[in-house]
Image (cartoon, rainbow over all chains, first blue to last red; front, side):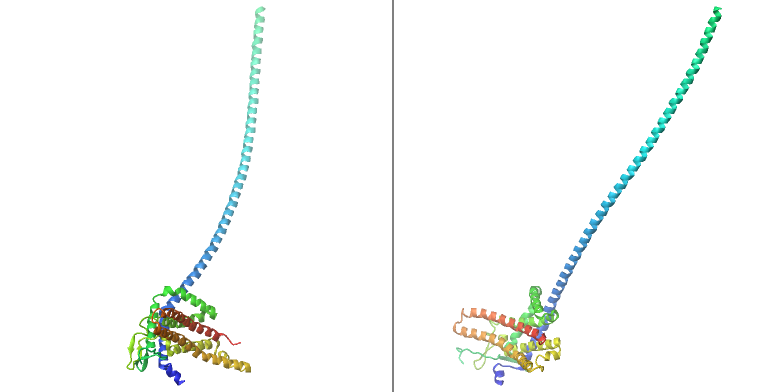
Length: 151
Length: 235
């Protein structure tokens, strides 16, 4: 054993020095190399995870927005149809009223005209009667006068 | 000794003392590695992808994201420390700049870090302690201890003893595997350089760089796997 130690030059002090040396190297590399690099890697990984998460969220939100859009369009179309229907119905009912009004007015006007015609005919008849009477009187007067002359 | 012979020393050469602690050329080399790895801190973005890959692999192996996160610095530092030391070992100047001692022995200023048992033992002890601590922290002392001291049956007791031995044997296998591979590579190149100084050492050096990578990966991966075994409860 002693021979091995002497042949290989094994010395506990040297082992200690090399151990300390290695420990020091480990400490230096840890502080200035491993830690910064691993921190950077961690940060990057976290960022990637966050980016993926964000992308997924954005995609979900986009899907929701699409669904919302479709829903709004559907509702708007439905509402528009309803409005058009209502307007059509309203117009139809208005038309009906207008027609009825016009009809009524026409009937009224016709009645009025008929009434006026009847009244005018009455008046004409009366006038004619009066004229005929007057003429008759005049004729009678004339005949009487002629008779008297003859006598 | 004349210069024509190859001088191979299993032990690292001492180049001085500092407060009673001998300073060897491998210790100096580890400071160089330290300095090189220090510059890595300026290349954070570049190695980010690599880190994520390693962390994901560790999480997959340990099946525990928190533990993987905690062990990640250690495993990666083990790998980087060994790997960097192994790939710079052929840099001109390392192993060739030095001085000759009075007795004709050449002492290089820098020596490949893992060709010193003290370094590999230090790393092994750190890995060993971490494995045991994580095992106890995850399973609890009694449940972890049950792996090694199992009194429920004779067979269980025997298995426990074998487990205990293999656990301790790791200390040796870990340190000698790394030391042996890198040291053998160095020796092989030294021998080839002695006979064919040009061209031939290049493919061998390339191969040794590959071996350096593999050994660093093995050391780090084995630590990871043994942690996984330690946190898995005995059946």
